[in-house]
Image 1 (cartoon, rainbow, N blue to C red):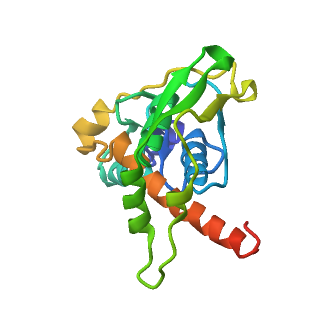
Image 2 (image 1 turned 45 degrees about the vertical axis):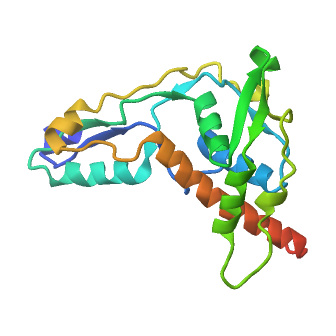
Length: 220
């Protein structure tokens, strides 16, 4: 704003709420979740450790947000915009959606740091569909998702106090009304579609990791 007002520069500010994609860093909670579940389905990991399950975030798709940035720069007059979906979802919901993508329903038991995510049901038919979709036309091996070993009653999510952030805001929600009115922008990809996109990508990575390990090759 200072440079815009002082020097007449065409400078816009984009206040971008959490934007995710399959390229998100592995330490961010969304990617941590999709990677962990994909690795569990392939038998490479047994449990997912998280902090505050009830923290809510306005998660959107990075591709949509890049479009918003481009639209800002097409405006004759620069301005400041909040870019967000206008919807907030909890970490708990993100976990449930991600497991659902591989046919697993989660039930929650306990409270506070004793809370755990337990497998309620496993839809084997959905796992078989995933397996078929993963197969290459040049190979006949079974996909590891058919032999994941996950069963109802398994504890697959646990709370680790190390992941709590005392100074962090528990609830974040953006209001993109100005971007919609002036730029004609709104988020196209909603959270269920985003979760599906990230899970599909990380399932491929997990299967590749398993294949490399089976062939005694290094995994980076």
